[in-house]
Length: 302
Image 1 (cartoon, rainbow, N blue to C red):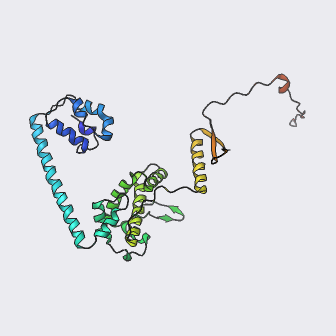
Image 2 (image 1 turned 180 degrees about the vertical axis):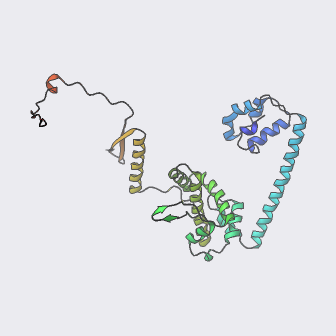
Image 3 (image 1 turned 120 degrees about the vertical axis):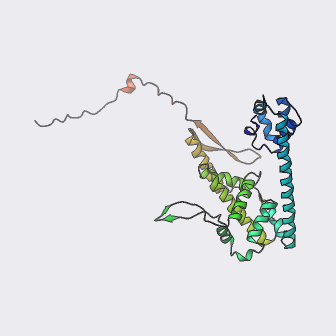
């Protein structure tokens, strides 16, 4: 049985439901696969194929039950530690700052507690945003010599803050309607599909937002995707026209259309250049004959 090779997380919601069904003695793969949730539903045929002919015995069920009970005990310990950490934050008088950090996109209770424990609630110890970003090690590197760049690796900083910001950056990059998601994909495209520079860029922005939130003492308000001005729209149009040209599509000049009682809009006429060009029509004999001036032949002297 290779259920773990089909599901991303065997201990997720879908995996737990399928394990419970197997432990209860269900044998039909089609019935077990029906416990798939959300994105796992698209993999039901693969799940059925992985469960066909499984040989789970009573011994296997007992061992799996032991492991699940052990996991429940560990989860109880984690919950207990989280409650103790929250009590310590309240005793230190940093509950307000802790909640302010959680208003930033992608920041949860655990990450907010780690970051607050490292940077502290008082932002006056850092002169500005650049200083705290450099201290945390999320600033882009600047290794240049003789006008040539020799790498943009980030500097070494606080490893605890850096790791927590990295996790928060992944969460913010997946949040719908957040401008950080657009920034992640924009930087990733410029970095030739690499995730590292994009994650560091989002983490850098998150730390600046945290600095502003703690300095102002007000929760973060989602600003959404910013609207493009005329200059940015022109740049976006030129970029996509170049991209279409590389894909073999020739884009002509925009045509402005006016509605009698509505806003103006422009359309772009695209021509597919992947087709073979038409052969020119053959010229008649009268068109092919042209008068050419007679030139004297130059002979080399003997």
